[in-house]
Amino acid sequence: MRLPLVLLMLMSTISCAEVNAVNANPDLDRPIYHYMPPKNWMNDPKPFFHKGEYHIFHQYNPHDAVWGPMHWGHAVSTDLVRWKRLPIALAPTPDSPDKDGCWTGCVVEKDGLFHILYTGVDPQTQCLATSRDLITWEKHKGNPVIAAPPEGVGDCWRDPCAWKEDGDWYAIIGSEKRDVGGAALLYRSKDLIHWDYMHPLFIGDKSRDGAMFECPDFFPLGGKHVLITSCGRTFWNIGRYVDHKFVCEKSGLTDGGQFYAAKTLIDDEKRRILWGWLQEPRSPEEMRAAGWSGALSLPRVLSLRADGTLGMAPPPELKALRGKHYPSRSVAAGEAVSLIDDIRGGALEITARIKVDGFGRAGLVLRATPDLSEGLYLWVDAKEKLLSAAGGRLPDPSVRREQIAFDPSDGAEIELRIYLDHSVLEVFADGRACLTARHYTKRADADRVGLFAVGGSAKCIIEAWEMKGIW
Ligand code: DQQ
Image (cartoon, rainbow, N blue to C red):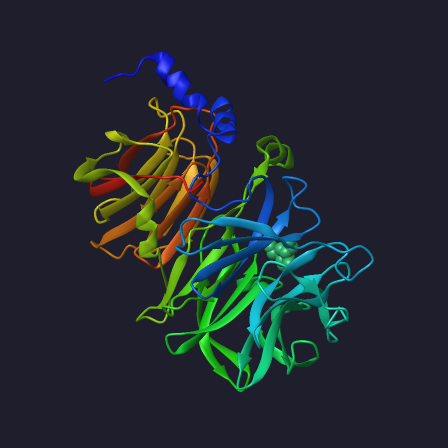
């Protein structure tokens, strides 16, 4: 039954003012099921779990949609899906060590109190704040608690990550050893206030994982230890923790695309969960025009795979976001993109199982216009051994290509778990490679899904759900 227009208009007037504003001026790119502040800029998540609650603290500029004087925004969830925004946890204090910003750090619990260790700027020093309830924070009167870096360290000396071990507190600070690479500098303390520098926990190689380490994270996983570091991309290193040094055995990328400064928590099911900052490859003018910038990635449950690499999977809780179901069907794809008749939308979860022998390149197009003049292509290339995503047109999607090493291994069926949320695309490939891409459009009809295979034909089993918004 079609409702009369008058009734439809009446129904729209009873929705809240914010919804009307959005409807009047639809932003086709704003995610609906990824956490974001209501407006302005966010980056760097800092997760913390306490008594059934997942807290995400994050870098936040409440005054503008571009990076600026950093505050700590705060949100909480009990189900990993719906988030409640909480008051700002930290703001810069004039004439203090964090006068120019409260940069990244970590949250720990000690003797029933919560503590944030963070970097104050400028210059970079390490500061402490304390809370009884995780909501109201009081800065330590003696800040900074670590005033200066050891000798031989470059400009980067920030983003402390602390943990308790054998009755003592340890922290690594992300840094750089000039001309060599990133360094995670290890400190020890009895009380989180007085810190002694020990030595580098680990020194990287600038040709492999960048000239410095931002936002380091260090934790046990499956009998090994993992060191996460960020410099341009976020890397994982898996190895052994021996005599307070990290011995790296394997390393790789947590994601090949717009995913950065990722950090973890451990929950009461002993799941180690990673979140990253979904970056916005837009100009300051475009970000200001949108009024928002940056989002929190979906949670990724980490595991140690049998081959010693890092496994990443979406948690089952995300199924709560599923709405209308598009049942599983088998679709043949050829060189020309075949659009699927019924599956469409800006917010979708898609599972695609693709057999990858006998052709070079096969994948999906998302956010496609019916005339295919626009689309976001996602594909596996068996020859390049890459998983890639790019906006544009086939065969040469021209706008910025995101990619990650991914060997589909001959003849194997690969499973892509795809989360599309307007401008956000997050993909989990076989639980061993992740790719995040951003794609912006002005076309309301850019909501089609299609399949293609270049250099042969491919069979794909595809199933999808419309995704519900969380606000
Ligand atoms: N972002 C913070 C720094 C960190 C960087 C500043 C990484 O603490 O190193 O907003 O994105």
